[in-house]
Structure formats: C-alpha cells, structure tokens
Length: 154
Image (cartoon, rainbow, N blue to C red):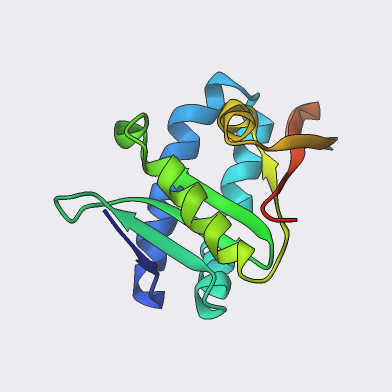
C-alpha cells in the first residue's frame, strides 16, 4: 500500500473517485437533494484548492491502482473516500490512521464530519459524537451528519 500527496494533475481522478463513491453509496442513506449537495460540495475547484495547499493524499493498492483519497486540513479529516469496489479491504482504515498520524504531529485531537454511511466506521476507530447537523437542500430534503472528535494524545 502506498499513500502519497496528490498532484494537481490528479484532480480529475480525485473528483471522479469521490463522485463515483457518493453516487454508489449515498443514495442508500440520503434523499436526492442531499446527494446532489454532496456532489456539488466536492467540486473540482475545491479539490484543486486543497491539492495546491498540500492537503490531499491518495492510496494505491498493491497493483498500483489508486483506490481512495483523504484530505487533511489542520486537525480535520475531510473528503475520505474509497472506491466502492475496494471498500471492506482496510483502505479506509489505513487512510484514517495515516491522517491521524499527520494530525498528531501538531494537534492533540482529530475532528471530522461523518456522513451516515461512515459514522459506524469512525465510532469503531474511537471517535465520539460532538454535534448533530442538518442542512436543508433541494426539494426540502435534509443532509444530516455528525461532527466527531477523537483524542490522539494527552
């Protein structure tokens, strides 16, 4: 497994992985307006901005295929996605551990916003609920998520 910083030329790959994962997984948890909000939120412009800031990382499998991504901004884990066909193989856990190690260099705790499909994973990794949020989206739909934290060191 190889985790490395993303390059600007990989922005379209990251957007495609993110959007493919959202489109495959989120409709099972969220109404259409919320799914559309997620897709628009993870725009090419935001991905490029984060790559330029040096905050985006990619993970490859043993065959060299890019299978997931994570963004680390300060002490916040953002945009963690693993392609649907590679989920359940530990890539998400590796990205979380990688992000936590980076964060622990400068912060005592990690923070993140957890979607419904990811919440159980973060609970298993030691994160605790801090706040519940709901955003009104198209068609009167709601996007609900939890803000979570984990202590990394005293």
